[in-house]
Image 1 (cartoon, helix red, strand yellow):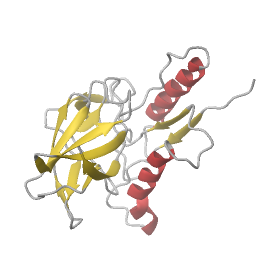
Image 2 (cartoon, rainbow, N blue to C red):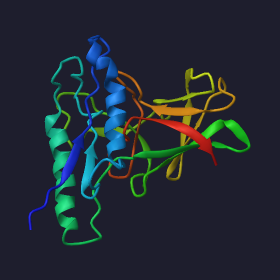
Image 3 (cartoon, rainbow, N blue to C red):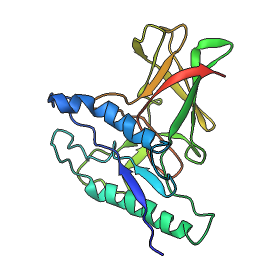
Length: 218
């Protein structure tokens, strides 16, 4: 029987020096790619995976075709092999970075929110630092971060985003900002050229996908 596996490759982070109109929509495109994983418009999401490349440019984000294709290829190959293995074993899991699914405000403090992730993608959440050098490989790409988790922002009812303190709590991330009294939105690495020295990864050293979520109540 013929079958196919489907993978979505997330776009690189272009340098902030790139001001062409098309690149300004990069965050929206990334979110659209993420949404495809659960889209009712897709015939089937079985054997559908997304490969995130936000951390793979080896420090060459200023060029239109950055380096790091070898790292991206290694990630995609691992996912593809897991997909084919799952045809033989229902226990096979396709590797994925943390995929944000829901954000909720805490009942006792609406300025604090909880981000939860798709089942199986948030095991062993940790803060890691990408290795932005040309000699980076799939095996030495990240190291433990010395700084707290970064890249999270929250907005209140006015829609103005502020940098948020973020901490890992089990398989979730807790976000808070003193400048927001009631969180209505949470985003992560939402920008044309997101860059952070302390990014969110899971136990298999795959990065979290950038995202934007509306906030509900716990």
